[in-house]
Image (cartoon, rainbow, N blue to C red):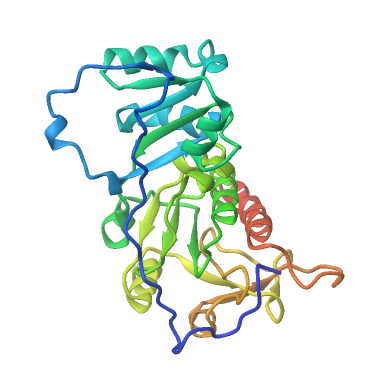
Length: 296
């Protein structure tokens, strides 16, 4: 029981969605807050466009970026109470001439984050470049691997929860359709609790071509459907598997589901129609993890 049914949606067998430009917020340097001003780096003129940045918030999201990609941090905002535990990050900012600002007013951090769930820290961060499926796939290790193909998932909180589960269960990558609007946002990164830094986003090409590439790399594709699929817990799952997850409301594109090698459903009581797509993803990944553990 994944999120939504398996209706066709769209005008053809493959739905396409306009891909918007990246999002980024311009830092506010005004106000009476205390600000640590660093000298501009020598390559300031070569800095990326603001659209290549994303505004992250939440301790785990920011700390995960600092742990994996400190050079991606462009600006930091924090509450005074966070200074002691963010000392390593603040020292790195000073050493690398990255500006940070201690914000006295909670409302100001709320405004900067666009949310009250910032946990006292906000950061402007360079987006990690998306990888192309054809270039990324040959670099993937042999043996059991699981990928997630997100067909129409758009809610940032669901996306963040999916990334968190993907990181927990060791998913190799999340696959995004060529024209999908889905992109990492501050809200998604916060819900992912650091998982967004652990799972690469890979952009696919045409669906048929992408399926050929995946099958050529030894993957089977499994459509996750609300009803009519094989019982997930009784099915023999292959070690190299792509779960294709449908949209939150309208479900998976029917043409895409029919083109998959397997159709899987999560059995339940029927008291509710289906699981939320993020919850369903966690269940599907746990089932695959059992198979992968047995094979290694």
